[in-house]
Structure formats: structure tokens, C-alpha cells
Image (cartoon, rainbow, N blue to C red; front, side, top):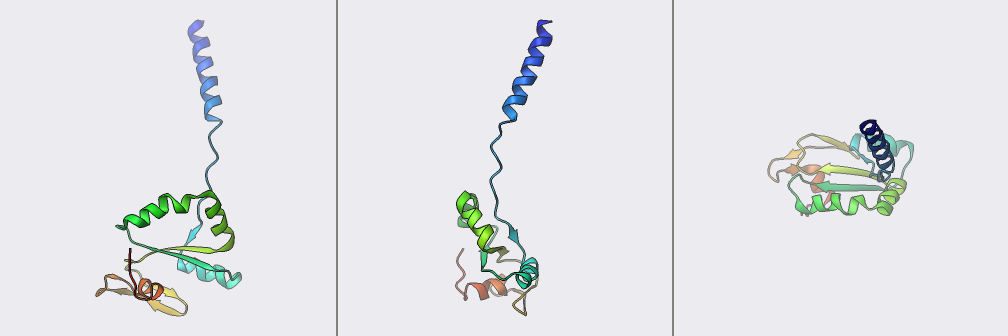
Length: 122
């Protein structure tokens, strides 16, 4: 009897504790350039483009700190189309009626060069 009561009590306490999980934080709604063109055609608003690379330490810091700030996240989602773009992407990207391809000389996508005005810094 005692063992059954202990198990029942433990299950109730565990259920109680897990029911008070903090609400999930709002995340930035990152979209692709393809999605951007469709959404922008329906409703124009400013565009935020995060140009990053997989190896960039500061890019990872931005993802962990800046882009998880609650007020900033809500503000970006409300007022901008947020696009995350890997500068080293080998895929062709159609943006602003132009096709951007991978540039082997710079080892980045031409779109990254275009968006940064040639000032690549990661």
C-alpha cells in the first residue's frame, strides 16, 4: 500500500512540475528568397537579410544571443521579412529579377557579394 501511494504521489508531483514549463520563446520566422518573392508580391515590407557562413563564429553568437532576444524577435517578425542566406551557398538564387550563382573565385555566392557590396566580412 505504501509503495503504491508513493508511486502515485511521485507521478502527481512529476505531472505538476512538468505542467509549468516556461512558454516557448518566439523565434524569428526565417524565410528563403523564393518565399520572400511570393510574400513581397502580396504585401511589401522591409527585408532583413542575415548573410552568414557555417564556420563564422560571430554569426553563431548572433543566432544564440541577438536573434533570441524576445522583443527583437517580435519586432522583426512583425515589421520585416527575415531571410537567412548562407554566403557560401552553391545553389543559384533568383532575386530582384537576376540569377545569382556561386563564384568559385571568391568562394561565395554572387548574391552575397551583391548584398555586401563586395565587402565580405564574416
